[in-house]
Every structure is written in C-alpha cells, then in structure tokens.
Image 1 (cartoon, rainbow, N blue to C red):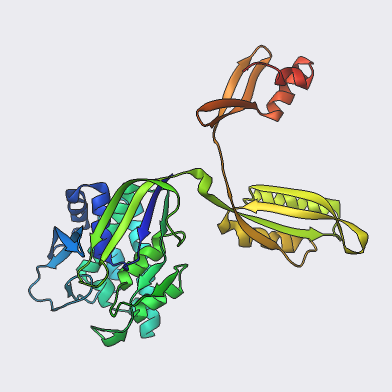
Image 2 (cartoon, rainbow, N blue to C red):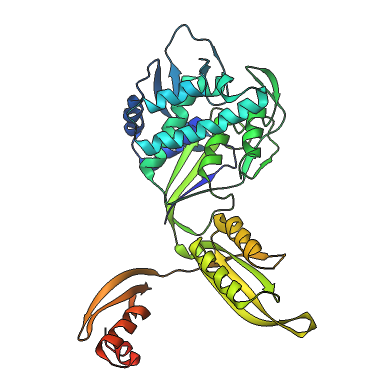
Length: 393
C-alpha cells in the first residue's frame, strides 16, 4: 500500500508542502508546467536549496510580479493581497486545464480555509474576502499541492501529531496569538491532533493546517513501512529546531490495517430479529457479523453480537444495531488484522467450471473453492460434495 507520512514536528505550511512533495516526485519542472494550466500570471516560482540546522531541503518561493500589489512578510513567503472570495478562487480552478481529481482536492482544501475565515470574521462564506485564500501564492500552494498529491497517488496519507508554536505574530489584521484564529478553527473542524511546543512563533499556517486536515486520515507515530524516498521541505524561519517538513514515501503492509470490533450482549430479542439485523449489517459495510451463545445474569440464555467493520462505518452500523435490536449499549475496540492477497479464479474440472479464490502467503499459493460453486457441481453431477473438494487443483 503506497503511503505518504507527513512529519509535522516543525509545523506545516503551503510552500513547505510543495517543496517536500516536489522532492518526492523528483521533477521540479512537473509542478511548474502543471501550474501553467491554471492560466493565471503575475508570478514566478523559485525552487532552491536551503540549509536548516544542518539539514538541506528544498525551498519553494512564489514571487509576485504585479507591481501594483502590496506586499508584507508572512511565514510562508511574501504575500501580495488580492481580495478574492471563495467563488473567485473556485472559478479559477474550474476554468483551468488541470485534472479533475486535483481540482476537487484543491477546492476541498480551500473550503476548509474559507469556513475558518468565515467563522473568525463572522461573515457568510460568499462575503469573505480573504487574504490567505485570495492571494496568488496561496492559490499556487494549494493547487500545487493537489497536483503533486494526485501525481504521487498514494493509497493512504497519515501524519504525525502537528506541532505549532506559541506567542504572538504580526499579520494583516494586527497582532495575533499562535495558533492564529483561522488555523485554530481549521483544527477545530477536523480530526487533526495538534499541540503547542516551546517555539515562540507560528509553525502552522492556515494553508498548512487546511492541507494536512484534508489529506491525513490519522495522526500517529510513523507506522511500519518500507521507506523508498523522503522529501525535505524547508521553511523560511531560522529556529532552534529545524524549520523543515519531512514527508516519507513508501510501502506499508496490509497487516497494519486497523479495524473496529463492536460487541453487545442481547437476552431479550428473537432469532428472527437477530437474523434480519445480521443481513442489514452486512448490506451496510460490515466485514463480519456473528453471534455467540452466552449466559447472562439471572441465568438467561442470550447471544453476544460481534460486528467487525472499518472505522468510518462505526456510526452507521451502531445505529442499525440500536434501531433493530433491544440492546441499549455497545462496546467497541480497535484491533489490527492481516489479510492475504487474493484473487477470484475459474478452474476447469472434469465435472465442469469451478469458481475459487487464489490466495498468496509468503510466496506460496493456495486454492480455496467457493462453496456455492462446489455445491452446484455436486448437484449437477449427482456426486457427494466431498468428491468435488477432493479434486486436485
């Protein structure tokens, strides 16, 4: 499983992300050529090497060339403000020639920033004219990130816990606390896990916060994976820690797949209802459902319902259990499972065509016939079921 792991121990910003992902794909011109499909001018991209606390990384700077725009220094790079709103930004993206997946990802990231700015300034989305989102450099950062992510096309993206600094910074609206309000709101409306560390400045920009909130499915330590490449994205600040975003690219084994096991004990529900509930759970994404006979208090014969599922399906499946059965409480826990590689195959036998699964484990192959197909051949040929199972495959 192709995996990207973002090490945000020194925060994250838009241009640091661009730089790290550019190192992963190993082609600086790819980003520059793809961004031409946006059909906006007034900027150039400077890609260089910078050393941060002895670590050499790539630095991406978006340089504005419009003379009439005003500039000020910001964490990511020099910002020049064009007061576009979300509609304007989405129109630029929609009218571009970049691929549809990159368009969709870029718009989702922009929406996170827009919602945060809307909350902070207490204005409807369509009335927010934001510096952060409206400026050309932010458009380049976010759209460029979407382009590079879809070029790499990972199966999974995960992140470390995101570190931000503390204290105060100067920005367009005056002196702000760190994390700045927009970054705080983006974190509050996502599953991002973050903390403050003892660095007296901003480490996470709103653009960086929106990028990692949209991309990462979980926030944890680096899982077991075979590392194939590391991208180092250098920031602009000189700190007591390296101002670098490190992105790992590699293969993560399927045995690291995390699943959820839900259980509940039921002593006052009929077999018909329990059977019907099992069918509904399977239809709605459960990986496995089974009942175990148990004895509960007052010596009541009962059943323990066990449901195995993926994390996004927890709420939906719990609602089915509560609605269809008489239980009033459900336990759940996280476990890991190993799945072997498998593929459906068709086997020609002397009795006819047989459907089976081919399973691979540690270089060895096993063939497991499908029961319904075995049953069909046995009935068709008037032979015992075991005779079909005993065939050599």
